[in-house]
Image (tube, rainbow, N blue to C red; front, side):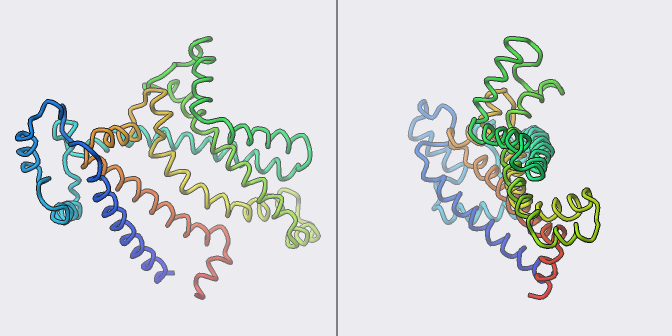
Length: 309
């Protein structure tokens, strides 16, 4: 197990280096400059600014300097925010996106697993059909459509909830539901399929034959073994949600990191592009690593196989 963890850490470091390199050289292909009001700047002024920020040096030299600063924990300063450190800007916006994503992920897990388990246990009944209708709607209806419908009905028409912003618990309800409805549908579909497959396995029949109670068979054997495919999709899904979804943040005027990332691309804010990409990548790679370790917790056979390899 220790050897496996060391190997995975090495792979993670190599993957991050490749991501940093590809992002660094790709963003330099963007047209324009990273400076505010660039249309008002003369060529001489742009040349002076490029020299000040080292953008007049060859790309390999710029890359080596950036990697050196990165190893020191320095992500640079933003061109669009008056020289503010990138880490400071991310530190302000990331908690908002993480809060939104975490709440949406909880909704997705709780209701998705519940619907999937019910559909699997009561397949070909009204419970099964009802759960799958919800799942199909969640997959088919885009989150931005659901968000705007809820805004109109619950906020504009009936004034039950705030229409936008992120200022208190009541402001969280609509964006959480809009963002979490898709995960509910996805998790419900996967869980239903896994439950149906697991309940048809021989060891489930043997557990019943031994006289185990229905709750014991359902939760100790069926549900636990059905969670493996769920863990696979939940990891990347959690990263996407916790780093914020741009459309939902825009609709509800939420000051998250997703909105800032797109703005940095539009304005050629190179340090912000790099800093946000690195944050996304680290989160995704770490979550995938944790998911791999969780396989052994959920299914001891995987842990045993890993120990023997």
